[in-house]
Length: 177
Image (cartoon, rainbow, N blue to C red):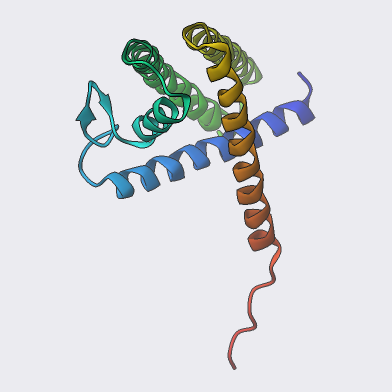
């Protein structure tokens, strides 16, 4: 990995880390003191993921058996993600400490970068596996509706990104003299 790639990776890692912290703080404010998933209902929290699962169950018209299976898959993935996130956080922290040390050790930096790259690939593979398992639960009609939901979510995300870009490019108001 050349120096430019390393700098890009470090910047991306910093941005993702900050976004994760900001998102986690936002979620805690919205949920109050109810915990990670905003309280438990049906064995799965009613935080963001619980609401998304509720919306999915309603919109896809899942049968009780399908809903139970989808929620179990989501619970299992959430547990796995939480433990993986902790090891990733520790590796990002170690990487940043090394990058900003008096005498950065390139071997240690490469070790942390390699771990994070492997972790990222594993996370993507696990995400895909979970999605495939969830897909097996759905009927063809439900899959078609899921495609619509994914497209709608992408549109919402793009609008949100555009608003953020607009806010970031606005010039600050001149200070009163």
